Image (tube, rainbow, N blue to C red):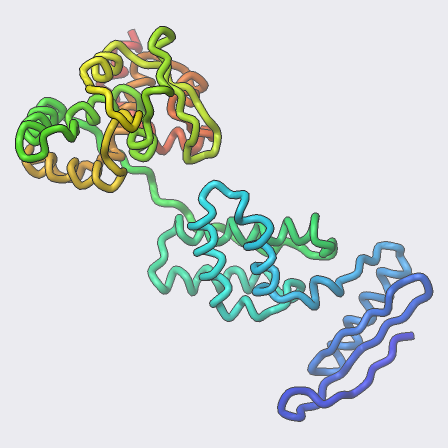
Length: 337
């Protein structure tokens, strides 16, 4: 039989300590603010032992979310591609009131309340989604690798925030010609040597991300095979990008840098130069990343299939590929017959 012992809790308030002891099982001890809760907990433990399905909750009940996040930071985060950014996310979660709770006590309703709090603070859907992804991974690791087999993953019990529709901005009318003309003028001025016009053409021809373009090196180019290797990508999977005649022409016109890089600009500098070029060209609402949307859509318009396009762009799921694809009905008319 379970035993229940009254104790003095915080503020000298009476609490109840429940003890369950069975031969062949470790003693189970838990403290509750009412005897009824203690009895309900003990009844559950005894029932699970009797049915042979008992799994100790001690580790999960004695480990706070903050402590689990500490361990996650030490053991899991260093192996992630964006370790610095993930570390900042861990520290942000540790500052939350929720982090004081034991892992075992956190339920779906607590995760839902956390989501609402983040949204009230102005966090966007994708930011909240990334927070939830980290928490979900933490609970799964704790359950499978850290001896907390009794844990349920509360993140899996809540509806995730709906992501906004992907941007559908594409080049229209004579925008590409105006953009390139303004970029060439920009390159010919005080910013000579930057090569933003070549970068724009390159982005449209390859669908590469801004960071991937900034990190390009000459020794990653296989000129004979007309392929560029991208060893480090956002998704963590290297890929090889086939190069069009126009893309090769861009490379053939570039000087070789002593540091082995193809371009001499950081990702943020590329965006800043692009914004100035758009302003000079009188083009509004266009970002450098929109060129990746443009390039991806053009690959489909050339008749390439889903897997072919995904192998070029590096998208891992069809859902994400769809967010980056915006086909124009006018361009599909000819293929209908």
